[in-house]
Length: 115
Image (cartoon, rainbow, N blue to C red; front, side, top):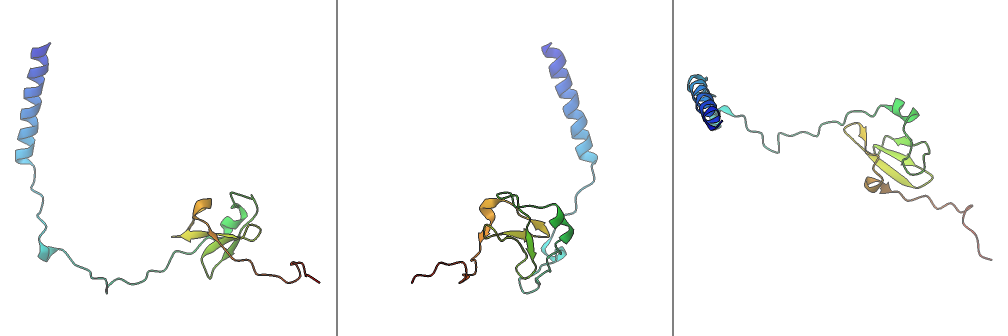
């Protein structure tokens, strides 16, 4: 059994070695062949738009209520809980730990008055 294993090992090694000798060489990368971009060349790329038709299917993972899309902040808003889910590259991030708390407007009609 040992002879068979060692024989296969030697023949396979020779086959690989022969292939490597005749394999085409990979072109070396030199500093002159690589284009270099500085931070000043980088432009703010526009985010892909959010597909508003997804609002028919997406609900808040916590309350299971529909969400509202806010184009100004590029977030999905849950008015009931006061949280906003970010949208990155057109994909909503629906992880509750990643959601941002939003400040609800203080409505004078909902706050009790002291007399």
